[in-house]
Amino acid sequence: METQAGDPGAFRAFDLHRVPSPCFVVDRARLEQNLQILADVKQRSGAKVLLALKAFSMWSLADLVGEYLDGTCASGLWEATLAKEKYHGELTTFSAAYKTSEIDAIAELSDHLLFNSPAQLAAYADRAEKHCSLGLRINPEHSEGEVEKYDPCAPCSRLGTPLSQLGDFDWSQIDGIHMHTLCEQGFEPLERTFAAVERALGGKLHSLKWINFGGGHHITRADYDREALVEFLTRVQHQYGVQAYIEPGEAVALDTGILIGEILDLPENSMSLAITDLSATCHMPDVIEAPYRPALLDEPDAGHTYRLGGPSCLAGDVIGDYTFAEPLKVGQRIAFLDQAHYSMVKTNTFNGIALPSIAIWDSATDALTLQREFSYSDFRDRLS
Ligand SMILES: Cc1ncc(COP(=O)(O)O)c(C=O)c1O
Image 1: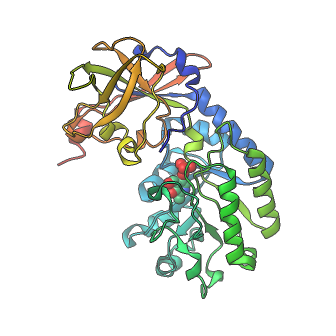
Image 2: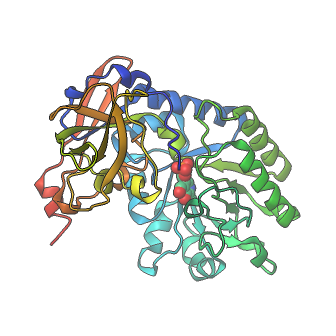
Image 3: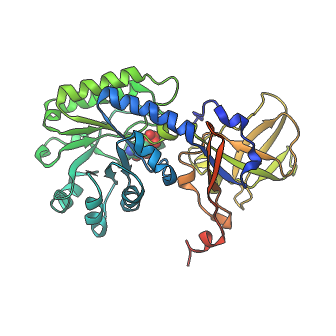
């Protein structure tokens, strides 16, 4: 995959030595800009916008998110609990399958509860419906994804009930449907996917109270066609008499954060190598999983090229090959762009490697707050 990181923006001027290393630094002002864009879509369309906590659950910024968005969406009990404890507004929960031991607590916390299959809906509807509004996640069976791993409509996908299996479904059991089929995409794939849903479901959509269009909409990217999105959401709500929802994650946190690290050693093996205190496998697992090459702050077109990798035992703990204007020095700081989403939420302590600290910087005022530093006890206490 290609990184969608845009311009480094205000981070170009940030002194990387102002925080300990490694450290996530999130720009509050940049986050507010993204939230303003999403709030504008919300206001002009009448759709509700929820933050997908799976992408970005930096709860120290929950109050700011709450000023602009309608609430959050969670993937299960722990995210739902975090949503209620720290965030504002409504909560929608979707999990590919719920456990009997957790369903009552999840239903009590949630305003909308989405089931992945008619079987799970049948198993838990009675217990859940007294607490929240129920919906079904559908699989529109219309692929727009470039990478199969991130395409919930790929063959044999377990995510969502295929439309072709809904022939004898009793629509009176649910208030809404949910579809999440996109990944870092523009408006047109959404329009084409919903056209496939309309062709398959037709009049059934009129019986619903709400339609949730999931995430994957890169609404805050400069080239996203927001006018078309506003028109689309307005049209769907008007035509079917429903409340529309979207639940972006990436679009909320896009380009708001960097991950700062330090050069620890500069060995050679057929090429120049650099070991950093940043680990792909511990701190940016999507680099290996997606895979993708994160953008580096201030990388020139030509200069001295190094293969950057982490301190872990994993031979494949490689971030990528990067070029620097001057030869690297031990102790030098570097920063990867666009790391606020899907990195902070995925960190782990494999090899006992330290978790990055978390800081908030406000590029509008230059105020810097070190929110959280982690220690040995965070590693120890996940084990027993
Ligand atoms: C059900 C659901 N909703 C919302 C999202 C958020 O997607 P994104 O961060 O790409 O906007 C995801 C991401 O996987 C998801 O699975």
